[in-house]
Length: 254
Image (cartoon, rainbow, N blue to C red):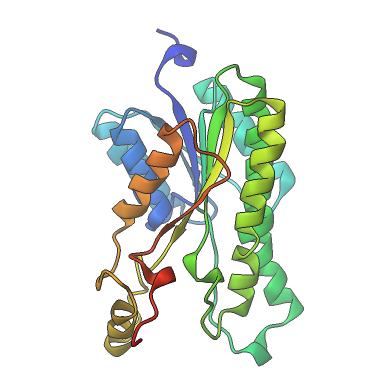
């Protein structure tokens, strides 16, 4: 069996760092996908992830790229396609965020987060999506957004401004790509309180849980399962799926 006839291929941006994208990559590998592990600076953990996946019997390779750079994105996708022979799934999980008072948010800080969270997601989705259009089988793109763009909290204005574009981008790309090939679908997952920072204070963590309808933190596996659902259900496109324990619908205290 040639590489082009083997299992489906998924490229997951941001999966080199030990965050949600890494768990998504491991979940897809466990379900028969050959996976591309993308990183920008987390080379050691990316290579360790590939080694662990290969030891478990999966097929994996890692790819370095600055996803805010069009040429870098093109080179990454070219190399991934050359190695695996096809691209069936793209998961856009790369992200950056910083906590800053409004008075501290400069144009440069705004653009830094926009370049990764907005432009980076778009550049990867456009590059891979147009290749999927040329495949008879099409493909599936899943972006990772954030539930809190509709109920933002303080000190993250640059982050939320950049993530706020994800739902519109998802729906627009779903239309653009399906018009070219109706087997190409684009969706998004909007995670809630999942993998909270280790530095968060205990009282702040307790407040987050209290404000969540299901009264607990989510696990990255919850996000991975949602991503896989959107990949596998071929009659779903243009959807932004909250995976937030009911946080986005819950008015705590009322």
